[in-house]
Image (cartoon, rainbow, N blue to C red; front, side, top):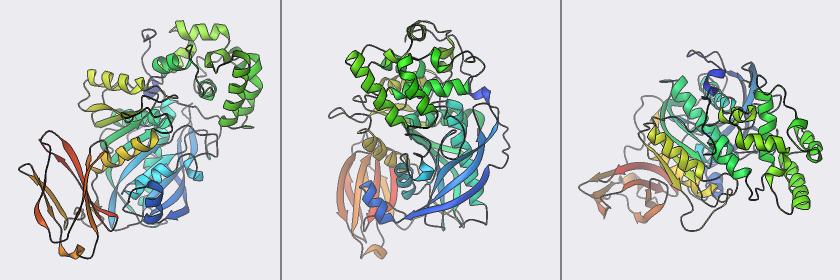
Length: 487
């Protein structure tokens, strides 16, 4: 660590919410539908449900704590006989206002795919993006957390409103996100456990490749002597924190932070004349021309850079530390996914977070590397991490009938006893192509075999030290998932 922290986190005290929530839902508008076949093709693995997509407008708080309109995407499985768990998915860094889930952009495919496995998935656009006015406070823990949580409340209201097609949800909740979304999902996770105990039944959290240590790991990673090609992240952090922290960044202006030659492009991005990708391209090209390498530190004025690297009381450092989200103890099952080849978000974020959380008394937190065979970069890490999350969540997912809460698919049995797996498939599936797959808890396929209806027999010996997820597919459609502790 570069320096000892001398301030306490106060992001959960900036905005105080009452336990009893005011109405959050303003309106919801149907956008599109995808069949299970279309989503299976997109995902590369069979899914269980088609999905309807809605743009949701709802109320949340901005960085000043004032009521604020926001937008997000609700992904609803196409089966009104089932009560589905909720999923809070937080998106990664986008290009700008229109590159968000409610516009079917900004990585909307991941919440769509998750929903197709049987979740009512909520994906907030975040404050300052989509329909939300103003500057987006990038990697600002409070607004990311509350934007995601308030969308959950809004979609739950939507499920109880006769003005919308019927769908049903349970209190079971899964939380996840990638990149900026990993930071955002961690913030929402902490906020839910500390501010809303008992409001939702948090089954599991899956935070992927997130910058949980903004003030330490990410500063060292981005402002060192090594090239860092995503310079626009630093610009957006500065713009967002000037918006979010007027009380102690009131004397800061762009002219007092960045070198003059970069100001025109930064202001064009602030004014939404260009997107983040164009901003990044312009700055990296100039850095290559001037320094022969993309050294992120060179866009900062020298006194600003020195203060960030050496003075923990420096106001910008105070803002950075306020948005570190790893120093707490989650009580729900938590996986942190990372790739060591990640060139945008250092994998050390996940290692530090898992270690500190465990030291703080968290009962079940683990950091899981996704590129054990060969290094994967930030984009390449998405696929194995997301696939792992599907099976991690699926091992705990509860699907209930809307009428009487009886568990679905009781007719298809998967049992484990005496170190052997027993499969009981009724003859109603006799005309189906049946396949049984075994996965590790982090999503790795262990084995796969064809099975037949009418079977009730021992299938395979299992490693007595492992935990597995068994998934049964009929004609490519997932019909049963069961987790087993085999020790």
